[in-house]
Length: 121
View 1: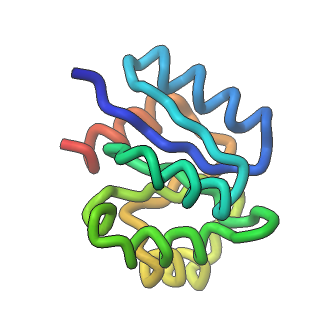
View 2 (view 1 turned 90 degrees about the horizontal axis):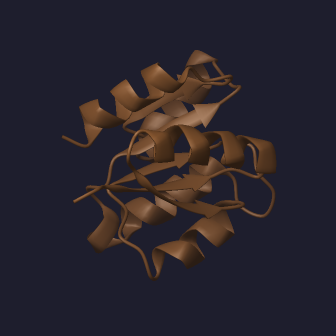
């Protein structure tokens, strides 16, 4: 059975690139445009992995991860942060919010798939 991945990013181009890379690797992909939309999608989905951006309107990635971690049902779902940010402070803040891993944009499809396989084993 294929695994489901939720991607949360305000950039349509980035969502499209993620969907193509993940679908080509055999994953089912559900998408959200920001943290608020991501939480709405999660009401009806239980993904195997979540990939989220940090800088988004309405609710950023930090708030989104904190909300996901408060949900008992989703507490153990791995969350990969995919962002242009790379400062040690942001990485630590993401870890504190519940991030499992960190990938810098632009992403390499093979590295992304490797990271997903590592956290979703």
